[in-house]
Image (cartoon, rainbow, N blue to C red; front, side, top):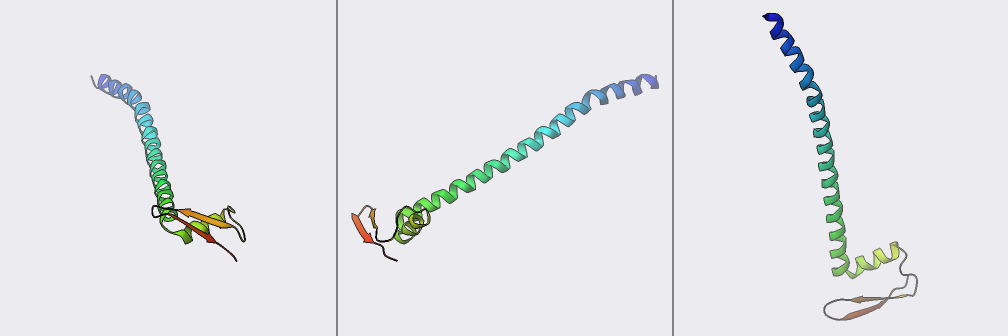
Length: 92
């Protein structure tokens, strides 16, 4: 009788362990995906903040344009906003 119980337990353990390993692997993949998702959300928030600053702050817009080499010495920067158009000539 004990042999049957032990044999049943061994077979059950052998059947359950691969599923347990698979569950741990899937759990690790899920955690990794959640972390990647959170990183993407942080990146999107940074981009939204920069976009808002560019729309509202002319100095920041000019700094970003110079940093990305979109405008150079003695070029005119035209900023269009809700009130109208502002033209600024930037010199170094």
